[in-house]
Image 1 (tube, rainbow, N blue to C red):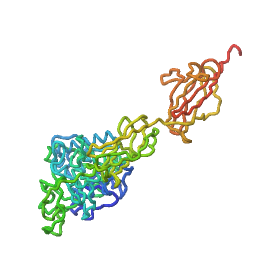
Image 2 (cartoon, helix red, strand yellow):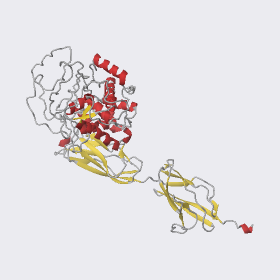
Image 3 (tube, rainbow, N blue to C red):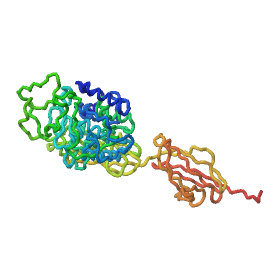
Image 4 (cartoon, rainbow, N blue to C red):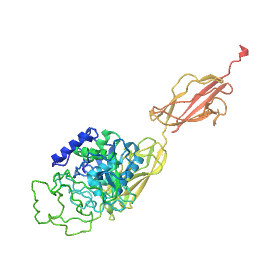
Length: 576
């Protein structure tokens, strides 16, 4: 369950000797053979879009909550080299609940459409979902893919886990004191605020929905420039979810197992984990592992009453950890009240205003000057802190935020302001819109932005030889260099046209010419400079009466250059 960065926050025993021995045995018999390549802190980072910076206090996805250490059976669901398409039947352990499986496959397709280079396999999501929640508790989800009861991790109160104080006012996890990991993929609220997705298209980002959670996990695993078809990047991605060698080997084992074959089973009939978790290596329940029917967990809408004077019940065996993490509220007593939850910071926002965003213009391939900033306020005009604002690039454009993301979510500061990452202009010119919206509300504002063509303010010829040719022959190569503000101007459009003399020159229909792609003579052509600002014109043929002709080059941005081409008469053979 626990993605984290820098150092392992769980201070207790990671697994029992039994689990370690099982992992070692599996590693020797069927592990994928990939080394544990990522050291502490060795994770992709590309600004606001990376897990290391957006993972909620450095604790990654779930703040180092427990995860199941069950391993797949040594007998695989299919033969080596056989198809991974779903067979009708197979070993119980290879069955994945229908809605959960559909969510993993949909997430794979969605990510492939936005980040094809990542090559996210749905089997990796299935492996993590197995380890994190036993495939949403065996597929106990409704028709929309939402878990029938919330799946919550223990309070991250520093007692054997990371210390993460409440970041969502209990909206997702029902705990207003500390954060808890939530949902089938176990996101802590602060991480969900950044990586949350609407995977089922219902307009909500719900960590308890398997479609939303699977898509969010997919984006998280693909952060930076990872290519999950490589062992190195796949290991780094899994370790970013939970920086533990045992966790990596466990996920890798299920990943290999699911790649050998799976089959679909009805929702609610998936095989539940039967072995220990990383937090509960030896279960106090006879037989070990969680009960076949997981105990209900508190609803996010119910906030346990803090305090209380009742004494905690003494555990049956003090030498072993409790099989269930302690619940908030009075020790040994269920919550007695159900207070109306206060609105989340985002829900209290009624207005989103521009706070100094200027004109948004950039040359193709460049970075926009200035940035986009907004201020969130409530009905009383006061600033709202910790509200989630999502900035999205819309319209027909290839402009993206630095790091390659088209949409980013930022929390407002104490003054209610949120600033989007810098925008990097694509090659497509024209106008587009950046929309800022407060998550979970209809409060929005938008900004117009424009990408202009690459420009050159200077054109110079790089050759010195006079351009002279006998009629019917070709001129020497014509090369020029384009610059903008003293630097080489790359990918600038330059129009080369043969022109007439006079105060108002027009295109000349006589004299030297070049040819188009079909070999037809043309006297005007549009070209593009190279990365170093250089431009080599196509071959020009000497034609027309003897004399001097003018070739005018005009670049985007206004730079011009006129080159003279002299056509000489062909010698009369009879005269010689």
